[in-house]
Length: 244
Image: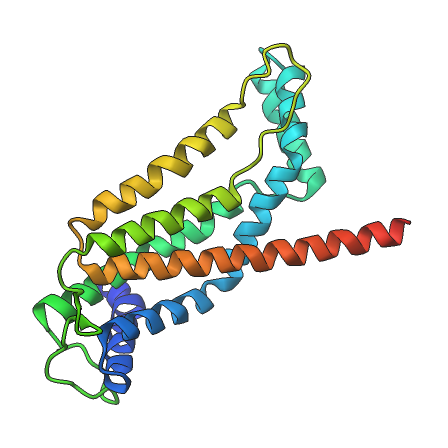
């Protein structure tokens, strides 16, 4: 399993990093280019995930109505919820798939940056990738990406906050007397604030190269969300025109 992980993920990412470093001898730019390539590869999954989140946002009022209707009947609520998902053609778990796939990619990126920036272990290069001998860990001759860089971690946290805010489900207004926020909405709000803080704190103990990766991948994620939202809005406008 470990060997499969190395062959499928770690070696390609590591070689891609060195390949771009040979083209442009700045490890920061090389990391940015690698991140863009990774984002392009997982774009179909990211697109599906964002669509699923938007769809979940659309049916949120119906889900809350079901909670009120089946209050105290967990079995009935579960059945009605699954029927609603089936009717709306929504998979509640599809938004988690990109996260599960990105986890091994992120681990591979971590080891690639650690070996390339800290240990300068270049023994895993393909035959067509030139061995540069060593890699200068400085980005723009200023930031040492082999060491923790709180500035990059801060940028990554801020970008993650805005990404979470864009994708956060808006709490609909319900007719129940309490008008309390739903559990889902409460958790979304907590995640919006806590996850960026966790990212910043974690970056204090990780190589700056990984913080740069987090920052760039999050910026690209925001760009993804904007594109998908615009496409969904255009589709919705066309449907309204057809109905009219």
